[in-house]
Length: 104
Image (cartoon, rainbow, N blue to C red; front, side, top):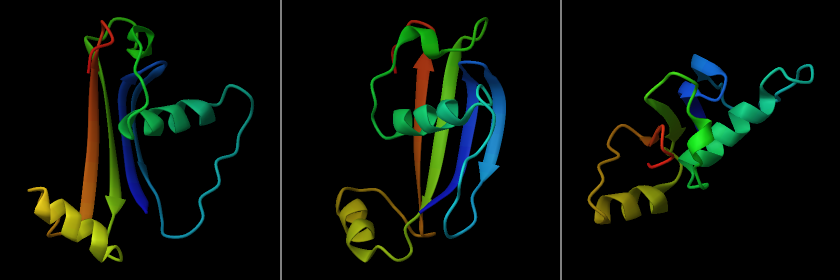
């Protein structure tokens, strides 16, 4: 379950930190409020293709991190352990850094 999302210098966003409570989270808002920016940023941490234009103008790079709670997912925790990634605290953090040229 997604528990935290951190976005820096991504599109129009200079910096935002979001904590998510357990259960259903609904994103609502006016057109242009940034709902799609949040979803697209999360998609980048999950492997979507990055383009050069996603870095906020004037910034050297964009950074996005998503923290997931994996307490109730023993198979995932076991797979991570076998792959050499420690998940002792029950969380998994995926982080993506994209430079102004679109490389990550």
